[in-house]
Image (cartoon, rainbow, N blue to C red; front, side, top):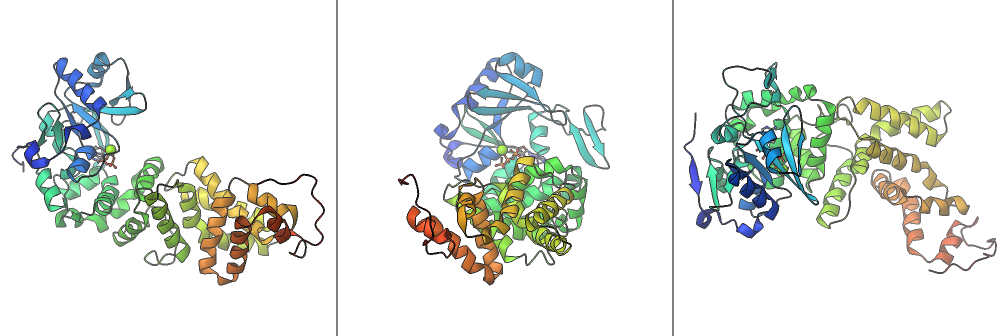
Amino acid sequence: MSTPTRIIDQDEHGIRPEKISTNARKVIERLHQAGHLAYIVGGSIRDLVLGHDPKDFDVATSATPEEVAEVFRNARLIGRRFRLAHVRFGREVIEVATFRGSGEGGEDEHRELEAGRLVRDNVWGSEEEDARRRDFTINALMYDPETATIRDHVGGYQDLVDRYLRLIGDPVTRYREDPVRLLRAVRFMVKLDLKLEPETAGPVVTMAPLLHDIPPARLFDEILKLFLGGRAWPTYQALVKNNLWEPLFPGLFDDPSEPPVLVEQAMKNTDDRIAQGKPVTPGFLFAAFLWAKVETRAEDLVAEGMAPVEALAAAGEEAIVAQARRVAIHRRFSTIAKEIWCMQPRFRKRRGKRALKLMSERRFRAAYDFLLLRALENPDLQELADFWTTIQEVDPDERHKMVSPDGRGKRRRPRKRKVVN
Ligand code: ATP
Ligand code: MG
């Protein structure tokens, strides 16, 4: 089934030209001069129609990657599964992809399917074919900066107006081709507040197990987009509802529809921090997701005679290795998670230099935030959490009193140097 092409002009779509990246425009102009077709495509046009600021601009063109490289000295060819060119302007990178064809009529060395799954997609095609090989109709709009018009080959503009998220083509085939589209469906639905069109929604729950075939590294990239997009908690709930949580993070909670309070609050805090423009690390979220499992295992190891910090380190490593079979966790984030876990027993030591030293460690703040979350589940920890809240708020003199042997500072040795604050 093919939809007639619609050209939507500025009066209707209302995108102000100055909202379009100057560099993306430059790329298109130069490609035009070299005789190629070129449009701004994908998420940026969708976001602009919805009134959001896009985070980056992608270009689709009739030029092959080699031809793009001939036009731009600053182009770099990347990718194997999906070859394209990156054109860099200082900190901004414009992704320039060649129009892909449908690949109908079989596969060859440029386009390859494994059990219906698309493992390579480098067959060039026409503008219309390129629109149709994209995932959702709202992601297939093409914008021509020279005429300020949107070219819509798949009915995506009307879907945006109606706020529908609809897969292009037959949903079962499209999910099988690339099961990551299951996750993308949930992500766009939640992030952009769209309705999943019924045929697009239909197969999600039953096809969810296909995520098992996706390489862990690709899932990691997708997880970051899912949980650091500012709507982690509603995204989590939608994933669980659609059977998509378990294939990613198997066996972490008894009932994923009611995750531990600590996990729920960690996601809500992440969303709040993003809303306030504060930095967030996926390391903290991973620490929260795996905590119940790590804590239980560490308790067993302590019962066998291991020291608490070592037990957490060992249990943490085990949990991370097991998890990495599904979703690769970059070392720098798993390290943060381990540091957060291993600091937990150290909060119990409130006296002496050790307590002050803890405060100066670089992971203190994250580990303290984690302690506050643990106190939500375990009221016995509240008094301890309050101690660490107060000690951060008081002046240095008071701080030294708090960590002195009786907590009142009587036996404090005189300090040599005056602490100026
Ligand atoms: P975001 O705002 O998250 O960047 P996006 O729509 O730009 O959203 P990208 O992953 O940057 O998403 O992809 C750019 C475009 O490439 C998409 O808009 C879509 O047209 C196409 N695309 C991306 N991933 C797929 C996929 N798995 N299958 C088909 N088309 C895809
Ligand atoms: Mg994008």
